[in-house]
Length: 245
Image 1: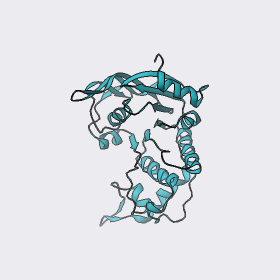
Image 2: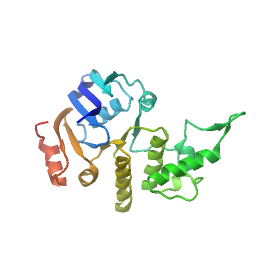
Image 3: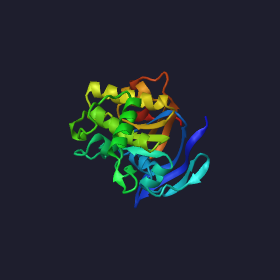
Image 4: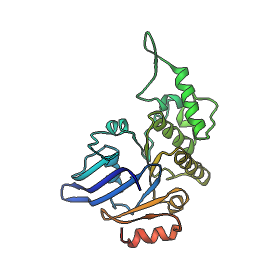
């Protein structure tokens, strides 16, 4: 396996509390990697490190074989790592295209006016790549379904041409239909050879879309194996009891 992103000996401490202990992780280009574990296992701390939201207390991060220091989420995004948190960080009252280009708006010379038409057209193109049809790109995001909001958040990652998309509990609180839509979005990212790190408590979702699963327990990696052949019950047992990594 050729690693796009590698972590070696990652540790994370908050005062006297140790959240991560000597975690090694490899993420291959184009794979869907599931990151699982109970609450308090260390998933959130690991995601924050990958997203550039916090620096590890110990260890090394390499990207494309080069050691990197992810100083901020903006730094991570500039290096091709986009993180979509559970709350999506969308602006509910802004339109679809405004959310896709939030913080990176396109302008028209010579006066620097917003190029609304181009941003709307590009947003429609991103949605079409995800097989999502929304007629009115001026629709406020607050009027969209949960699955459609996930699509808008993914479009923002596509706008930045992210190579690695981290999705934190993307199907939490969604119904059956919307969950199926989000899983299809992940499959489409996979089809584009983009790398997805999926953080999820939903074992059926992991079995449905992931190539490989890494399980954390009490801050340590306790399992790292292909998903093929595993059932949701198998994954639940790994989370409860662990296995040699």
